[in-house]
Amino acid sequence: MESNILPQNILLEGIKIDLKSVKPGAIYSHNVYDEFGSRIVAADSPLTERIIQSCRERGLRYLYYSKSFEAGANPAGLDLGRNAVSDRTQARARETSRAILEEIAERLQLGQEIDISRAKIIRSRELIEGIIDEVAHNDDAVLITLKELRNYDEYTFVHSANVAVIASTLAVRLGYSRDRIIEIGVGGLLHDIGKAIVGYQIVNKPTELTAEEIKSLMEHPHYGYKIAENNRNITRFQKQAILFHHERPDGMGYPFGFDAEGFIEKVPRDVRLISLCDAFSALTTERAYKPAYTQKRALRIMQNGVHAAFKKHSQFIYDDFRDFIKGIGFMINMGDYIFETEEMVRLNTGEIARILELRKNNSLNPIVRLLTDKKLQPQKREIIIDLENDFSVYVANILDKTSVDTHMLSLRTQAYPTPP
Ligand SMILES: [Fe+2]
Ligand SMILES: [Fe+2]
Image 1 (cartoon, protein in one colour):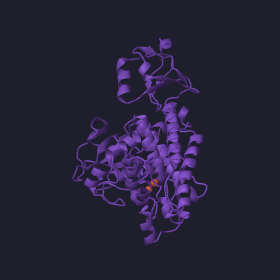
Image 2: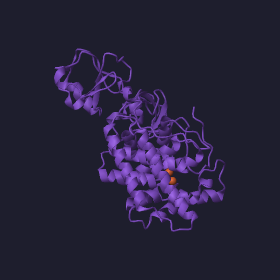
Image 3: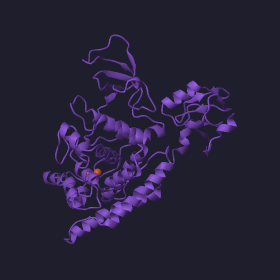
Image 4: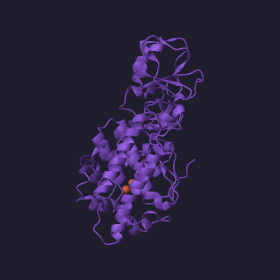
């Protein structure tokens, strides 16, 4: 039986089986695991129709078997060292980003009209094409972008390159068309071009900014838009990404500070995705005034921004955040979770709950026990809810007091907590 489903991909130690090719009744001579190291079926036992169906429902695409796998190990860990985007492409992204920002700064210095040459936009598109091809061939690899800078002056172009890589990877994994992925990726690369006008003495200033400097930094979306406005090689969507990437549904964003309605009406969904990539990159990159948070910590901070505790509006929209996590898949592929078991969380419905069991494919929907009701009165009965059964209920906040105001990440207006 095994012969007709021989897997195509032989990894270093384990064998990867495409779930689509598994026939009911297949028997393996070794234990079969999912990509997180949970045993699906024991050696010499058949993979029944029901088991295969439940794997599909969990969103699994591959199973693994190997003599050397121990229960609890992470077979997908074979891929842990593999980055979805190669070092060479990441370096190319940084070079492209540097070239664009330097061109702007140079023209500004020479008193010339500020613009981005067509050649640089073409180069940017080619860069994203390269990323698409790599991501498509590395669909279960983790995404690691540069978090450490050689010097703080590198920040804007490294950050822009990271946002381009993260946004295009996300768009590939969300199944977008090639043209759309290129549009979004180049949008990510260009989103902060206005910072070249603000000047790097302010952008990279290691100490507290003055009120005037903050004001000038908050103008970078406007400055960027001015540069792009009449450039026919930059699309309308990319101009929106430049202008709106710091707007937030809670009305606290800038430069316009749209209210919730204005935000939904004016900021397209894919600009919102670029904003998530932007916040994620900013959180995970070191600055003179803040540490580089781990990916897990960054996602926890962003999660707490989705439903800022007891506030009416949030910094991010839940559906966008869920797609962001699923599309990027960092934690899933690393065999880690956003939450911890036993920790206390607040559900979007208002109850406080304790996490009993974590979910690998639906990180925001663990199994929880309710501690209080919606009015925060203690629950007298034991109520356990599997949040995977109803996606309208999900974890809204982690009650660990780790909140960072993600609006102001580039503005240095708050003391940043150090990572634990
Ligand atoms: Fe920005
Ligand atoms: Fe940014």
